[in-house]
Length: 302
Image 1 (spheres, helix red, strand yellow):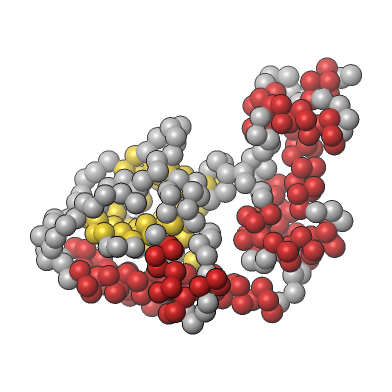
Image 2 (spheres, helix red, strand yellow; image 1 turned 60 degrees about the horizontal axis):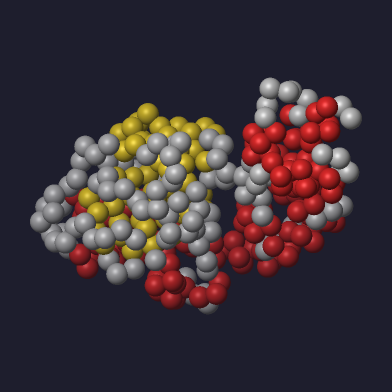
């Protein structure tokens, strides 16, 4: 987490900072100071002003944000491919540590952002949600607007805009909002243990895999997307598809790369990265194992 930037009630609202982090540059490890920021022992809260915004971070701590107005632009919550998004007022997101967050918009709305040392808040959040600490871990959440969350966010914004700050009150409001934002994780865990994994989810997951071949398709990520445990996913996936999620992903990446090899203008290394292989040599190794030939030999027509 970044060093303290707001030490007292007299600190003014920060405004007019350029909200640009080049997408082509390595992601930042710390959240830039764009608005008024207050730090507490286990989290910081910042009111980010509206404006053009290009976002490219991979934070060491858990991130959460909630927007005060409609938002649209392009972003990526899986891999590097930017896709259009259209968010309603008071939708929110949570991203676990080291999760890549990229996006850009010509005019982003005012946003309330949190960077959280989750282990230091785990007991507080689990107590508030009446669950065990092991039942809640940071994971990707795209949360729908909730009236109670909106009211809490508005009160926090009022505090951050006030000339004199009531730190204790702001901390209580912030923790209450974070508890509500993390609630879907606990509810999702409860649903996992109660509901069977149906074939519609498998079909949605297959579409997700095809759209994110260049991204992280580890079993844990796929299970989080589907809202089930990794064990449940592996068992249901093999039952419906006939093979494990890992083998399916490898096959789809191999198929996609094979199609791109037809066009000789694409270098082998670019094809490897575009289809989710870590390197050209990795792609070659997989091709030999799966197809018994190298990508170069396929390109030559051998």
